[in-house]
Amino acid sequence: AQKVTQAQTEISVVEKEDVTLDCVYETRDTTYYLFWYKQPPSGELVFLIRRNSFDEQNEISGRYSWNFQKSTSSFNFTITASQVVDSAVYFCALSEGYNQGGKLIFGQGTELSVKP
Amino acid sequence: EAGVAQSPRYKIIEKRQSVAFWCNPISGHATLYWYQQILGQGPKLLIQFQNNGVVDDSQLPKDRFSAERLKGVDSTLKIQPAKLEDSAVYLCASSLGSGISSYNEQFFGPGTRLTVL
Image 1: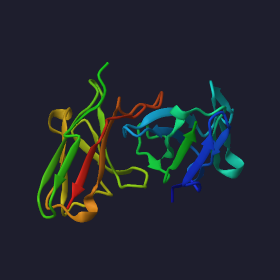
Image 2: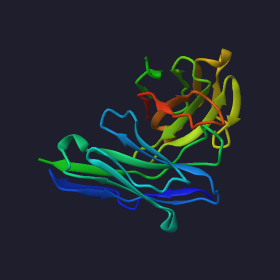
Image 3: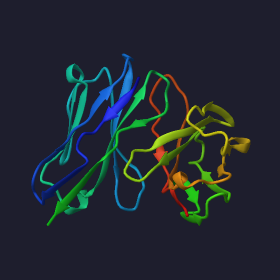
């Protein structure tokens, strides 16, 4: 069965600290997609990144970076030099198979609080 | 490009009442999703449409929830009668639709926050 686990419920850091959000997934498929979404207090889900199961290259986008390791079924998200505007709930999600546009299975979310 | 529109943004009802939510997806998007997000949890898919046909409604409580997507564009989600545990944010998302050549991103609307008293 497919499952996404975000063990960290809440994280609090001080501005400019680096922070890593953990994500562990379970799937029997060999082809799948992994995602990170941000949900600010306004409530709308904002897409951050998508990774397919065949691409284990790490990715960096500005202050954001992602580490995908199939060997440990993990897809961790690091924010470097955090800012107050990064405060939000972050969700990791999984979509199985080659069914394009398939349903997303979300983790419980990690609430990040960045204090000035 | 306009995003996914949802209305109302907030709704408060008493248990056993009925309620309906509306979603207008991004123009040209064939696939539409309804997710339920209970406080403190990640969103959970309720139903997925491809054009006006249902692709997946395995987690939709069909005794009280119903959804339709007439003409393959707008969609409504109805709860009748509502229970206390239906209090949640209902998110609508849309994507271009199924395709083999590339993954089609899901774009989310702002959600409807339902409170059942």
